[in-house]
Image (cartoon, rainbow, N blue to C red; front, side):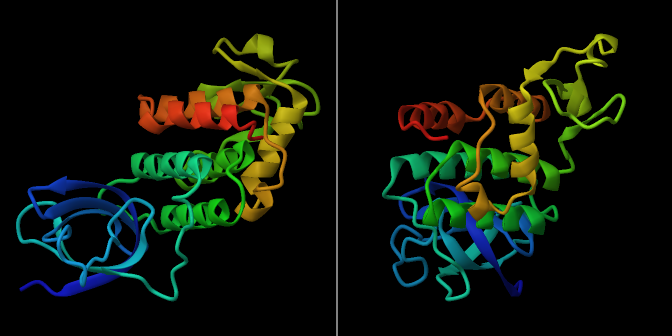
Length: 255
């Protein structure tokens, strides 16, 4: 029988399978993203105790199966070393947290190394839990996750002449950064015009700790558009949680 392995993990998504089982996808600290079958999860309070729901932060125990990609989840337990995420009672937090889960899911691959992504997601969900769900926190999470994935967007210096940005600039998706107004005529690619304040806000959010981002200034609609277009260019699809998050943040005046 395969040995039982364990890791801290965050449940990204889950669905019922048959009358008593669940199939779950988790982002683990030590093994990347894993999908697993939890036999009897809907009936076994002792082994799972509602620990396999999205946002659950658990110590996962599992065995690998000789054939097939799904691991066999044996247990999921709370741990004093793992901070639970207090999100479920606030609609705006649920919307932002769900987007964070889906974006982390989209940027990670099964069993590929993802310790950095696990840390980014953990810290972001902890910030959502203790503070408010804000546009600035969303943007900070997007920028940090993109940086982990190898897409370090640059809003501080012109990609063409390398001068610092002090006035409005133009974000070029294909270049993953901005060009200044002087260099813009030399670049044939489409662009999103960014006001200097939005470019500065994105620079700060890309470097801020998530709890600091709770009180930080968000980039305006131009900055949000720049990030969303870049994410869409990488994923080539729109996340299901995006429309819900946009509507909830707008309705609540989050900034």
